[in-house]
Amino acid sequence: MKRTLLTGLIILVFLGFLELHPEESRGKKTTLDELIQIALQQNLQIRAAKKEWEASLQKIPQAKALPDPVLSYAHFGQSIETRLGPQRNKISVSQQIPFFGKLGLKGEIAAQSSDVLEQQYHTVKADMVLKVKEAYFSLFLIDRSIRISQEEKGVYRRLSEIAAKKYETGQVGQQDALKAQLEISKVTEKLLNYHRVRKAIVAELNSLMNRETDSLLEETEEFAMPERQIDLEQLISWARENRPELRKAQSVIQKNRESLNLVKKDYYPDFRIMLDYIDIGAGTSDHPDDGRNAWMASIGINIPLWRKKLRAAEAEAIIRIKASEDLYENIENETLSRIHALYFEIETAREQIELYEFSLLPQAEQTLKASEIGYLTGKVDFLNLLDSERMILTIRNGYFKVLAELGRSLVRLERLVGQELYKMNDSSGEEVME
Image (tube, rainbow, N blue to C red; front, top):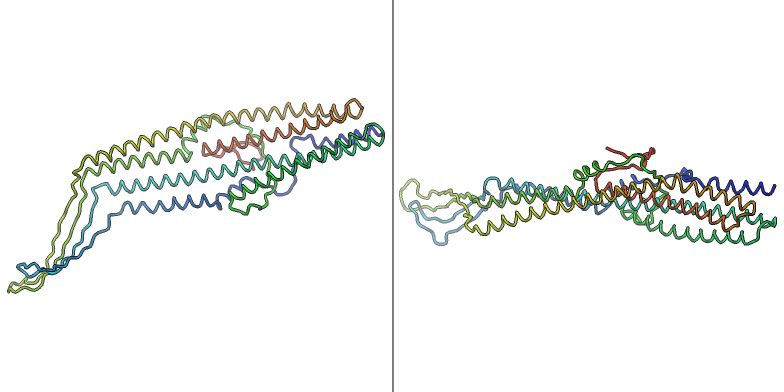
């Protein structure tokens, strides 16, 4: 009868403990989408980058505008006598007009400069989202470790009770109950460390969201392995099209090309239109136009005489184009290299998760059940039972560690390709291919 009671107690202890995905509490969960939305709205670095981009848009109409006209006034200290009378004052207005096409090119250069800052803004956003996602998966892992340790602590308490009952019946020595108490103390210390780590991760996430560092974050929602594999060629295509660093490098190339076109325009003269109005005093003649004011229109051009300076400016612009093209190619090569590396990391993690689910965990469960039966019959000592218990815990922790690493690899891949690959709240666990 006592043996049957003990068997029932141990079975009840382990039935709930051995599930790979224990039932979640029904309380509110911390969702990744919510954290990202708050960070995108509140993060000060993102706000600053956006304002820099918006400010650059105001430079486009400035670049395309004509230079300000020049108004000048001259007073003749000693009047110059003319046929109609003495010249007393002169008012002049002049307007510089750049050679045809120069203003349009300046506007294009300003627009490309604005595009560079726009892509910089998108880069800051993407980096911030990546930081939130990586911190989230760190929080996911620590939450699962805390949950497992809490369950572990509960199991050791029940084992301690079972050992105490067996000791009372004379089946085992008191050391079994003492060993269980020691394990409880170890788990308690481990939980304290986990909670310290969790506070640091929560503080990091709150900082990214521009919130108080001690703001509460609930346990993270579940994350399941994506069921569909990702097409490598599609990832590369997305990266070339969407990655902000590549688009920024393309804008720099285009800006430098427009700058070269503008430099070539400097071989042609700019124009200056001038209008002079001369105040003439009354003369001494009887001419009907006596004292009539005069005006004069004129046009001038600058002479691009110093060709050595112009050729040097053209050579500089050509070198800048080549440098920006090399930079683009370097970013593209690094991007493709990282995509391949992360792709194989994800595939390896998928295989590891399948190994945990279909091999390691079932084998560990069988070992634990055998140890459990052996302990009840007196063929296995308490230390062997604890070893089997630790093996189950190690495998469960290992499973969630690989799952978190899979999540981190996925979000790093998303950062490279500029495309969302997986939605946390997609209950099917499948990728979202838009």
